[in-house]
Image (tube, rainbow, N blue to C red; front, side):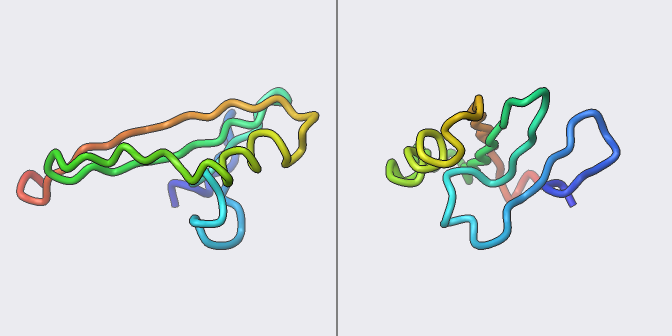
Length: 84
């Protein structure tokens, strides 16, 4: 439900297919700019520093729709099952 919202100023959507096939989890297009959002979860302070495979990031940012302005947003969320 968080990756498919509509009727708002910013419409967040998700591509079809597995998340491993792209460098981002969801995206939004606003005023001609595509905002690609990558969400990283870090459990109990275990490091999760990987962003995405460099090949996928290059494909999404440089090769897919090269004429479109893009922005890559990274959200890093820390969580603990005990604190949930």
